[in-house]
Length: 155
Length: 155
DNA sequence: CATCACGCAATAAATGAAGTTACATGAAAA
DNA sequence: TTTTCATGTAACTTCATTTATTGCGTGATG
Image (cartoon, rainbow over all chains, first blue to last red; front, top):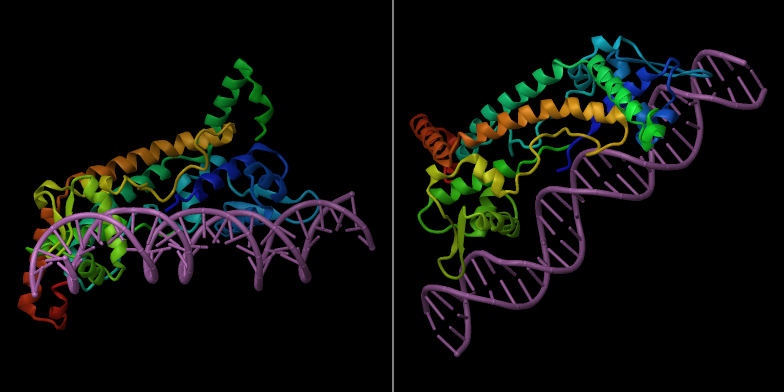
């Protein structure tokens, strides 16, 4: 069971988009994310339907944010991705006839629900603006120390 | 990303083992779990190393619990399974050089850690004895109402 | 009208979990 | 001691899911 990195990846993409003034192309983003442009489009298409980003065709086209950074929480992004399962472990069956399995599910569900609530509440408490601020703080810190990786800053 | 059902399944198996006096064979358990005996052995072999179950070969052999139900928490079982990732979402990279990704990871890690702690604490608070008691309560409830599924009770 | 960029369907490749086979080991019963 | 039962384990196959890729279509800009 490999952990899903979609949320992490999309946040990355959104911040990259926010970084620049002009719309960001799928090609550019794909390069930064080390993936294929079509994958970028696929994912962002979902976010567009939820009103998080906009896309424009033709010259000077590409992706841009539809709302200010401060008005997008990580939970918004998560939900725009279709609220994928948050927990890596789950029950074997939804409505088992086996009483043993019923007992197992009941106990696990309690725990799972609680953890899931904590996670979603946590995501709701962080906005992209928070992340962006953190990024700029890191940028500043790196600039003062002046390491070799400075060239990678743009991405 | 499909959720991992191993914990749920193993709990099911352990309760089945606890249900009967004599050791349970892989064949029996596989039948109840609708899987293959070798899969049962593979999984239980891990638990045996962690001291949760015992196995015996030959006539009258099979699997039995190495400790009383009340002394095995769901967390113990989870750890015996190798403490697999609990969250379905994670970071794209461990130690990214990209500052954007670093900022994303930092924010997510905080939330993830909290949720994970809640989940593990929750698992630690439930023992197999709890589950077994719940099972027997369900068994009793079903017996009184006397539904068609009574035949499935043994499993 | 040539170029750029997204839209989208369809397909291929990669990954990982689960199932299966085959054979070996050891214990109890006949 | 020989047969039967049961686990131990490696190797292999199957299956589902995710991700990457190709190809072609649409619309906007210069």
